[in-house]
Image (cartoon, helix red, strand yellow):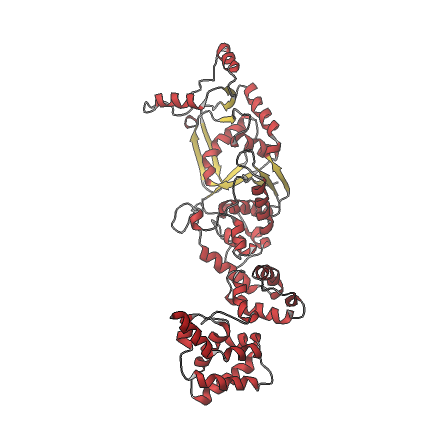
Length: 481
């Protein structure tokens, strides 16, 4: 049975690369009817924090990536790591090292440029009893180093293919530090063995760690899991993704108005394609995912693509589905009224259906809804100059206002019919009136269909803003001056 894990370190925010690693592990587990385990690698006591741990869990909950086991905290398993390290010492597969960093650095300097091995020189491998006792009496910190055997380490990466590394290029790496805390190599192997992990899916910055960990599995007499290393995500400039390319935390994308399903569909296309370009459900993505379909080429982070996916998801959602997301944003903007979920629900649902076609993020809704909810709106100066300066509007708009006032039903089809009739009678293009109304009612030169806009704004608000033609032009003139 497939068993995979996501093992973040709570020393920073969960970023896009880590989120993709988590998602691909989750997808593989769901595709194979396997088990997805959450492990928190918090052995770096100085840098790990409870706040970051809570942030990681909040991210996974927001994305809907549920785990089957865990969270397992490495900080609660320190005695197990020490025990396993000492097991290797007893078997002669590891040894105690008393060297200080300064001593190692000094000896390394002496061999620099000589062609001799660049790594740790095994100074402590065969210490005499006298040397050992002297170091002990000095109270030196004791590390445990793995004794790297000779030979070649070979494995088949499920994404990159066959990989081979000569162990002569691997120094005797530390398992336990002088303070008794485990290194990454020891803790990850011990935990993966205990959790019976079958597949390790992680970023390819870990490829260099894999040979060391395979040696540890062999030393413990355990079978290595299968490895799959995901290509690192690049920024638009084809350099390693960093803060300058976007948010530092997954939760920043949530706060910017992206929906979890759109974000996951975006991640799914990072090194893998589920097929045609559309929004897939989590169940559909899980059903399609295959490790052998993952590309080894580095994907490029494209915020425009994520916006497009998010907009596509929003436009396909019902008002009922959108309301909880929009409510939160409108509450933050002090625009929400409880009547939108009660008496005015039919009207509010129509408003969401109107605005969703042009909204790429949830954060766009409050601004787009503002002309329908408040009395005083801002006017785009360039739009005013372009669409409200025609002197004919001084006569046409009052006439159109009278037409609107006499209508039995102020609905989009009826509004369009009345407007086009007035334009024809006055010998002007309907576009003259349409653009003017858009500027006066919405304040922007671009909006959803103007007739639907007017219906939702209502007759009273529409007429009131139409009567502000001179005032709006004057206001823009003053600001310009």
